Length: 218
Image 1 (tube, rainbow, N blue to C red):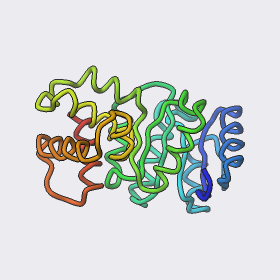
Image 2: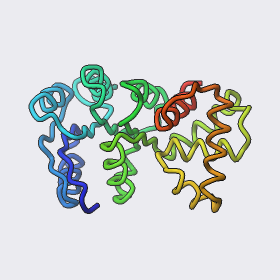
Image 3: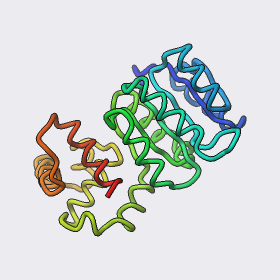
Image 4: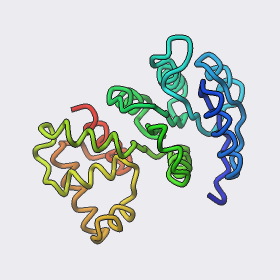
């Protein structure tokens, strides 16, 4: 992760995981400005430090329901360009959709906590989200594909596969390498997807975010 030094505010109520994340982020050159254990602490830390990115758990004290997520969405209401990466123990499609609905849908990520153990993927997600990218955990994408095929019935199997990879935050080049096709072919698939989802002409990155939102909402 050379050259990507980020100022991070971390919110996680589990002491061991919180300290582990602090150590991991620090080891790879990032600066953890604050590491807190509840939603109120998260709000205060963001106000005090204006970080490059927030990394937060979904469930935190006192209710252990969605306090961290609600705080993240609230923070992005005040500062729509605040990058937020949310960590969750389980797949909750509504949580992912609520987060992606905040701001303009860019600079957000939703990962399962198991992904933290895959260090390179986790750190890549932190950098991608901080840079304005949208990253959705591959397991969330897989479950959406299994449970929500009908609204995307206009898409071919290959187009659904490409859209799933877009939702994971992959670039056209990365998708081309994974599917062993040309970037031109990936671009054509994405153009077809955007057309079939009836997304209006707009700046390309924003249209990709809208496609992911459509993928999660419908």
